[in-house]
Length: 185
Image 1: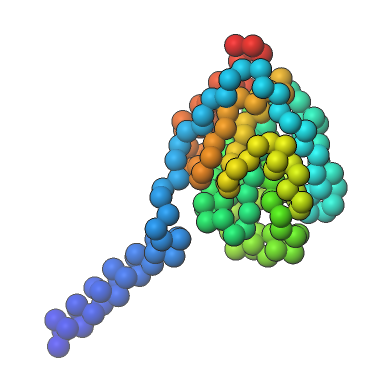
Image 2 (image 1 turned 30 degrees about the vertical axis):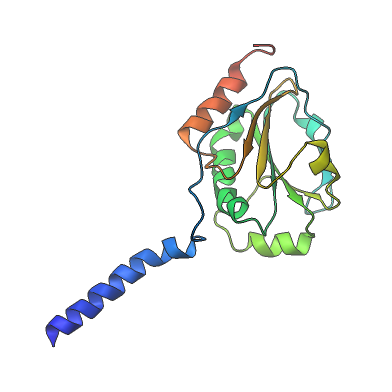
């Protein structure tokens, strides 16, 4: 009987250890670790949207910083998966002049607020709302998630389509290089 009990307990432990991975949206590819460079000289489109408190945030306010602009939705599995890494990125690089903005597409504040209670760490960076998807069109977003990195001079330096692990060392290095480079280089 002790052999049976040992096997049952072993099976329960193995199942228990695997449960967090199974719950993490099975079938999705892993998040990637790089950003695609954009041809120099492309200015960032306007971005002026309300946040959760209905206060308007304007991208121009962050001129001189590197700004990570992430387009996402709560129904998008890779968007949900990458959100905690955006918060970790913000925590690691905010003091170095990197700002994170997340633009929700087509959802109301109640839906987003409800989602925020399900993720850890919860975002402390600005969450903006593009309810009519006008900004989505201005930025040429074709799918979610899509992220742009705006250089301190206001040009778009990088783009990422699909989920990313934004606090991965490769991405942190790309952002640091952009932060210290001169315009036109």
